[in-house]
Length: 204
Image 1 (cartoon, rainbow, N blue to C red):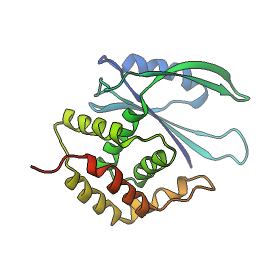
Image 2: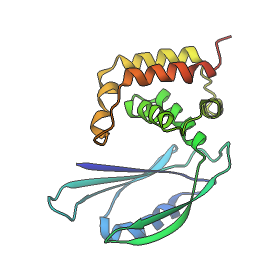
Image 3: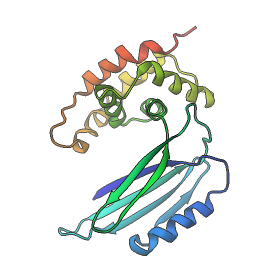
Image 4: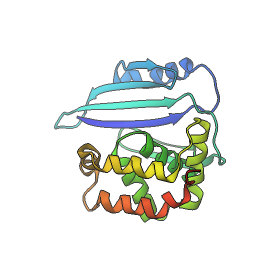
């Protein structure tokens, strides 16, 4: 089954029901009725449908909206976005976060969950020259402070090492990589330990 995940953040605190209703008005006619879930942490719509082109496979689309965080440390950016397919053509300007904001929350994801793809995203972003450690780590620390869960470099190092000892953390990323991309989680962990951990506070 192919799976696609779209993440959004609610910019201002407000009831989310009307937004979900509007999304369903546009998507349900061609994707069917989704599974809809609303919780204190966020809201999701999960669609399951069949592909139109042979071979027919089952597809899954998950739309997730973070409804609990309504702040950002850096100004939002307006970027052009275009779609050009045989089903639809169009373009728009979308609001998105600065790279250091996106990657700062990616560091948080690496800390809070056990998915090797988070470490890959950070390593690959650094290799591409997108991740600036000096700008990104402070964003992570600020988000953790907002959750009243400050993290030291030592605690994060222990957290990462425990993940590297778990087979699932090491094996979840390779199936997601496109051909031509090589990835070594141990080398990525070394990069993280050398470039990012030293910028985190030491225990008192």
